[in-house]
Length: 398
Image 1 (cartoon, rainbow, N blue to C red):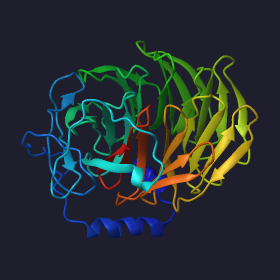
Image 2 (cartoon, helix red, strand yellow; image 1 turned 120 degrees about the horizontal axis):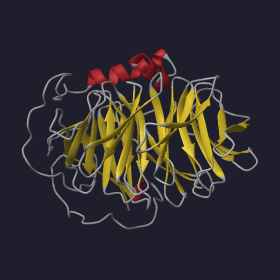
Image 3 (cartoon, helix red, strand yellow; image 1 turned 90 degrees about the horizontal axis):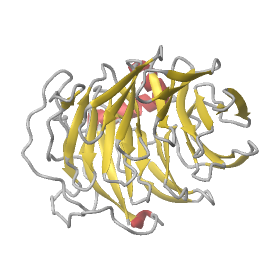
């Protein structure tokens, strides 16, 4: 529900009023109201640019309904530079070292994606496309090289909270306030399957490493393991202490991590179907995001208490605490080599961290409202962030 989402993202009334003032100071949006059909946009593509800007229009693609037919909704890709000056188009993800400072990145373009908020994003493993979800109940698939809207997936009846991409990037999973999970074919935009079992909003999900199973968590205080291709829920892990906001799974597929409103991080064994460990010295408020390092030995968590914590999964010990965000940490993402951590916060910033040292490498401050979701390509060449300002920023790592 909207009330629940607001309470997750804003720790105080002052924070809510701050963002309301920001919203009122912005020009009137040209996005259609709920239930209205968006105007058609002239064909074209967003070109690579040198910085970010808040306005502009570009191409759209006909929406795809749950049955694969054309549906509703549109999106726009905004050229990043106010002058609209174009640069060379890329035929493959750019190469280069990880970000070493604010000079080592540029915002390729801004996608005007959802009305009113972007709540979830997920990037393909090769960094060629991006999926986004919002409070408008829709899911959109974007070409990251051009900013072109490829598909709008219509099927959920309430806001989309979470997205996950299969290891082969052929399937997209989505979770919603309508209590369901949906599995989509990325190439065609067709709905493959709807999984029903959660009794409240689905808040988090992740694919198992084999690509054949999905782990989900929700406000019904359960973590569930699903088999794709069947309607069977293989296992249910109850978490009676609090609602689930985030889940992750180790690379070997044997351990599930979950966290949420009770500020605790719990580790579950898939083999024995039991709780293995609860991480102590945890956060002082709700845990909004967790990611597991590719080495399977490190877990990183982000919380409403404004901190990021790095944990040793083998011993359960706290390794270090990363500070710098001035409001709730809402989202985390790791590069494929586990060296670069991306965090998004209600303080409107995206921050990049060196995982090994805990050093803050860069702060990206182009959003005008809370950052609700972040994603990074496996090679670390692309970073994307989704915000309550209705936009997605796509960052090229130089």
